[in-house]
Length: 314
Length: 187
Image (cartoon, rainbow over all chains, first blue to last red; front, side, top):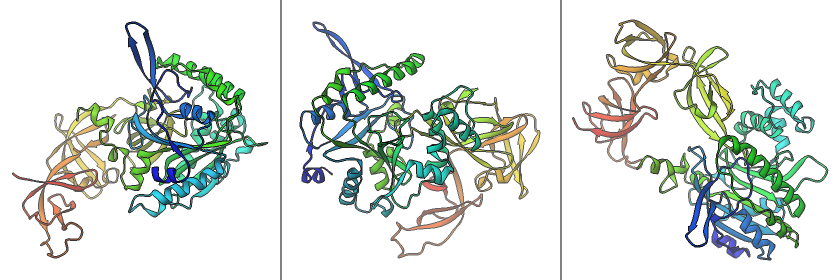
């Protein structure tokens, strides 16, 4: 994979995994630790859940296309076939490209780097489908017509889902429908790129002009979510607003659970003021990819010291 | 009430008034969204399975169950007959609710059962069990491409693929979930 990127004009980078601030992601719990020094005082630091903010700072400074294999950390992650609190992520940002270009790049990457014996159904060409098409096909839901929480909730009820009495966000109800009807039905004979995610799911992917979607895709291989791609937001104010909104939501959730509330750095958005290039970023779970390519049933089969075994003292 | 995130394999739940036991659990985080749990639940009375996807923070109605030891006596082709080892009460459990258990449970052996309102929700079979090899084919020499294996039948009627050196009358340890051979047991 390194050779592929090196030959295609990317620079490998190595950014901090121990950071004084993080990108606010309300649903991703963080690990915190403390830097301590008897003369300069102490400061809370965090293990990064992805190298995104540092890689974007480099791109803003003119690095061009970059890639990184990075250890990433997500706390409270439920252990299981597809989760380990410490995992390896490949992130690659391609300058002067959009999310459609990233599909072709990812196809070429996997076609050129698959391990010997990799099953056919994990290899390109990818199947492509929008989230709206998938919802229509597998759940009979017309997303264009259920754009507010109330109508979507009614739709979920019609499908026989049990929703708690308390109101919930559009995104949460959407995820119920998606996970119950759509994700289990995803064809597995080829990798599937599910594109155009609903705009209600807040993230740093640009919006599709004139339609309530975002230029974001997720790739499923063997039914497992393996990669996520954004056409990266470049507008500083939009990034600032996202930060404020996501941080407020993060604090709201964590105040009740008393989990780590990381510091954020609002000045991060300033790096977009100076002219951030058009760019598309992909994050790929390396443990999951290797698990699939090697025919293992759990990522623990490709991690030398799985978290669950360490916890059990093995 | 428990949170859906607390449900694990073996947890008993009440769904629309019917008891179900969780047989599979997988956590999923869609995209960067909040945590969900995907459950496969089984009705012990009908064997019917049900898939449920819930947010880990959703409430689920759990039921208080008791662990009681039962001795497995026999099956009549439709039901397993078990006896409470302290009260000697006998109970029937539909065989269809526990597929393959007829080849795993041994006559006269005691199993811990999950019981709710006089109904057996789960028979807790150990994940690894030692069986006696009742029948073994003669090994066919030469066919070693697949690592040289053959089939044997245990005293309970379970067919297991084993290495060719296993002989009739020997004991083997088997994973009862995957029905795979683990090792030879020297007695």
